[in-house]
Length: 171
Image (cartoon, rainbow, N blue to C red; front, side):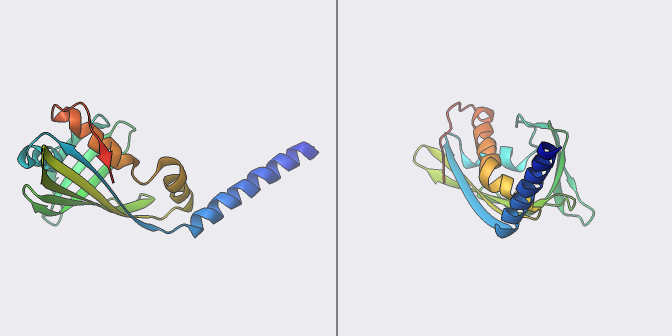
C-alpha cells in the first residue's frame, strides 16, 4: 500500500511540475523557417495558395468562401483532425498569410509565406506567429515537438511536390 501511495504522489508531483512549468512559458511565440527550391515563385505559389492535397499529412483540402465572404482553406488531416484557415493577405507570387479560424484548439495563430528570388530558384520562408493556451501543450511544443516541426514538414513536402527531392531547411 505504501508503494502505491508513493507512485500516486510521484505522478501528482510530476503533473503539477509539468503544468507549473507550462504556465511559466510564454503563450506567444514567433518562429521562422526557410528553404530554397529550383522552381519559380509562380510555381511554388500555386502549391502554397492552392489546395494542400500534395502534402502527405493531408487527406482532403479545399478552398471556399467563408461566412463573411473571406477565402478559407479547409483541411482534413490523416490524424483525423480538421483545420480551417482564413486567408488574410495574398500578394501573388510574393506572399500569403493564413490564420487559423478554429476556436476549439489549444493554439491559434498565423503563417506568413514569403517567396523571394534566389540564385538557383526561389526561397520560401514561413513565419509562424502563434499562441499556445494549454500549459501542457505549451511545454510539449517547446521541449518535445518544437515550434518549427510543422513548418519543417511543410517545407520538406513542398520539395517532392515540385520535383525536388533534396530540401535544405534553415532559420
